[in-house]
Image 1 (spheres, rainbow, N blue to C red):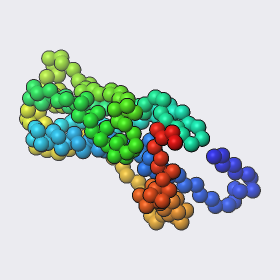
Image 2: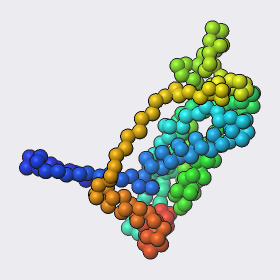
Image 3: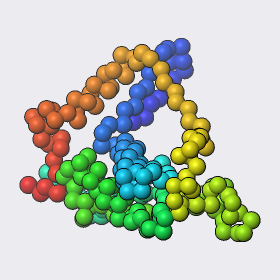
Image 4: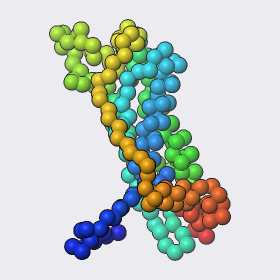
Length: 214
């Protein structure tokens, strides 16, 4: 869509609203990142008694290729799931199967959000994970006393100082405003209606399986 503003419009008030719905790649990627953090936190808390360090804030989805014609369509190459970030790989010498856990959880999440895909055939995973701490993990002798030396490979709970004193290493800022405008309400309502189970039940073409050739 192209928006063209002519000089005569400069004195007018206009509003543009964008809503990324439930199936938008950005929405799915954000939801996947949150879910992976929740799952990993619960897993390590239950297994090791503490939430181990991790960062899953750089998750991305890249659409695959598809064939589409009138009345049918199907994928010709899978959706690529990029899981980038840092994650704890060991605790007290025990290796954590991070890749198996993250891909399994991601398949569950995307299958729930996109129920007509086959996670085994339609998803391709690219995991770029690091256990390096910042400003830089090093094994030099003079750095052995560094608080971050074992951030992602703790030998025990004593290597997790946040259990005794909780501090913040990043500053996050949230911005919001209210009330929403009439146009924002309309756009939000349209998206909610189109993605509702009731609407899809009466309009199955909205949610048709891309593999259907009938």
